[in-house]
Picture 1: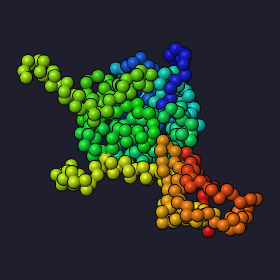
Picture 2 (picture 1 turned 60 degrees about the vertical axis):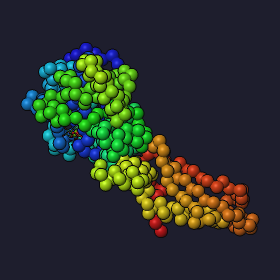
Picture 3 (picture 1 turned 90 degrees about the vertical axis):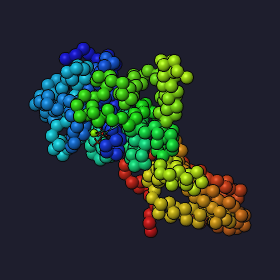
Picture 4 (picture 1 turned 90 degrees about the horizontal axis):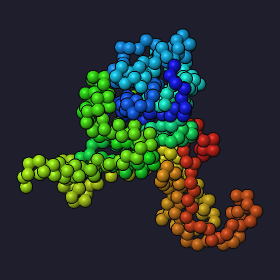
Length: 277
Length: 132
Ligand SMILES: Nc1ncnc2c1ncn2[C@@H]1O[C@H](COP(=O)(O)OP(=O)(O)OP(=O)(O)O)[C@@H](O)[C@H]1O
Ligand SMILES: [Mg+2]
């Protein structure tokens, strides 16, 4: 077992209400990013019905035991945790059989998260979509939460529902990640703006992730974008979220407003390197 | 954005869809957060007007009872222009009808902003209006 933890682990629920808005992608990328910053991180797949976190991390072939065996005490926690090869600070606790949903209680989740938290600085819980038992079990074990949404009416409405439930459960702080932002559409006001969403949900923004094809490429490979640190915009965004969580003050840039600056900077660079104009 | 949309926007005939999204969300969330559907809200509005009318004559046409939401707090906002107060005997009768010892101040405030419980609970509120 690793050295005894000094500070208590940060136990963060990654949730959204609506399905398919980017919870698992965020959990995987944030997990790697935190681990690379030296934090002992465990990502826990609480989406027992439709588990995917193993796949996004490229760990699907290395699973022997799961949370199910740990709870049944047929294996030790250390045996179930799958360490990431390239990033040994990160481990995955895989979800068990979907039938776990039939008997799993909030107390079970609290028990397993408490075990994991003993040997970690960060525990990230990948929450299932919806606000039913799966969500309630996962929320029962979390101290704080990140709500992720896209700038679309249905996703924002569902996020609002989830925020209400988190507040009544005393989960705090709750922070917001806005995913799949399309700067051009935002600039022409054909998409909810960053301020619109933060005004409506009244949550502090901890990250903005633009729509990025590299996200799909990285899922295909089972290598989160934050692993290889290629300069893709989404990779940078996930890294910044990790650093903000650790308390670093990294300003958020509204991508729909930053565009002009970017073009101006690019023109400047061309001007300098070519000596034209 | 199609050329048609663009022209419509130039002419000020159509709002950008992002703005529409925000307005629609604000409305629907005010209802979601208070756990009141439009029908219940309408019933509550009628009952509030009924009570207020016992004390003062109000301009129903101009009156407005609605839910507004800001910073995750939803408020019930009633804006009811008062024509005149009812004569004192009527006031005493009205107060007696609702079981109060004395008539209230006839110069009642014209705008009532009552914050509703901040967050929706998981169980439906037991104090929800009885349909009977
Ligand atoms: N910033 C992004 N740019 C492009 N594609 C993205 C982005 N974020 C997520 N996606 C894509 O959206 C899809 C859903 O992502 P993901 O599985 O992470 O969502 P989820 O919220 O975990 O879904 P579920 O509710 O089913 O668990 C995936 O195909 C993913 O590649
Ligand atoms: Mg998922």
